[in-house]
Image 1 (cartoon, rainbow, N blue to C red):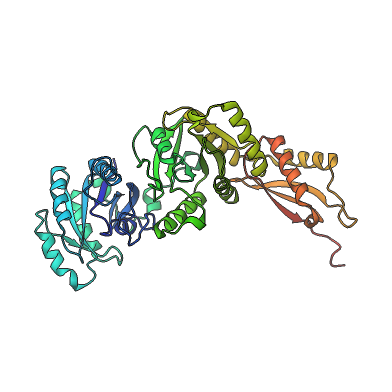
Image 2: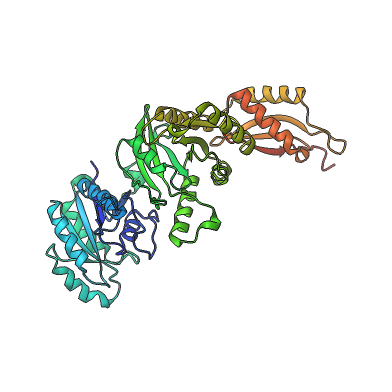
Amino acid sequence: MPFRVAIVGRPNVGKSTLFNRLIGRRKALVDDTPGVTRDRREGAAQLGDLRFTAIDTAGLEEAPAKALASRMREQTARALAAADVILFVVDGRAGVTPLDRHFTGWLRKGGRPVILVANKCESGAALTAIGEASGLGIGEPVAISAEHGEGLAELHAALRPHAPEDAVVERGASEKDETPLPAPADRPIRVAIIGRPNVGKSTLINRLLGDERVLTGPEPGITRDAIEVPWEAQGRRFALVDTAGLRRRAKIEDPVERLSAADTIQTVRESQVVVLVVDATASLEKQDLAIARLAIEEGRALVLAVNKWDLVDDPGAALKELHRKLGFSLAQVPGLAIATVSALHGRKLDMLTRAIIKSFEIWDKRVPTPALNRWIQSVTESHPPPLVKGRRPRLRFARQVATRPPTFAVFGNNLTTLPEDYLRYLSNNLREAFDLPGTVIRFELRQSDNPYAER
């Protein structure tokens, strides 16, 4: 079992900044607005010769039952239950508050080792606050500045006595030396769950996992960070990433929502499969199509999850209308995989899992060069490229130069004059010939050298 360290504290004391510092990259959203973090997130961290799993949590607040802040605290309580050590962070500038004192008692009852961390101590003004923190009765505070990377040696010294031997690595050992990357076939499929706010993305992830892993509720825009969680199904390993809902840019005024939207877009770029969740009762809206086009432009494998299908009165007619809209609005990916599900009731989730695996396999498919050249000879003979200014483009041969998405280099003469509609014809014919439905196909047109050009 990995050594697990949970970072807790009231809002805006710098927990996410410390989390980012420990994992060595900007993974958690950071902003001066209190309460940016809502879900707990995990990351592989290293501090000196210690390796561990760092857990970022929502800010501790008092709130009535069933309120959003209360549900956030439940997620933090789950993180504490799974942690080996707790870093209780207080604000070294603001000093100890009554809320800090209140939650100190709560942490004592948990039975886990607690290390008191006074953050934002890059100036002498924090000395008074450090003295106040000593009075909390959970040990002397470790003074750090997560933003500037100060005090991390002292934090290491405080953590080291609690770490098991397998969490300690030899000094100078690299991540590559200690933990080699698994073979590509063994790596989890990274799946981004995206869509507009309140279409049921987080509910879908919880239902797939069989656990209330991420926050859900009627309030729009609960999810802010992209939260990655491991999942296994049908003999495959996945990394599911819950993301913030994407609205039209013109409607985004909150700076935190703007950060969340940028985080979601970055998640799409880093993922392999994108599951676009739409509301079955709202049909396909313009924003749904805009999000789908984002995934297509990034070259990701795309699956459409139509949620709340249990609320549809006439499923046959609704599915027919959905196919019609997709054929008209997303013609660049004909045969797009569709799963009609109910996240709330857990219906047809196996269909969604199969669609994810199938889309990934198509996206990763390689076509043999001999078969590809037999195809290009056949297709150009039956439907030659049109004449352009009295000259006909000639497609000589082709080969696949990449997967993820399938990318084909076509060699020939006068290829710069190939019309767009002929390229679409080639793309659609290629899909049918080699069973590549619903995936992005890219062509690279490469002009053959003219041996007489220099004579």
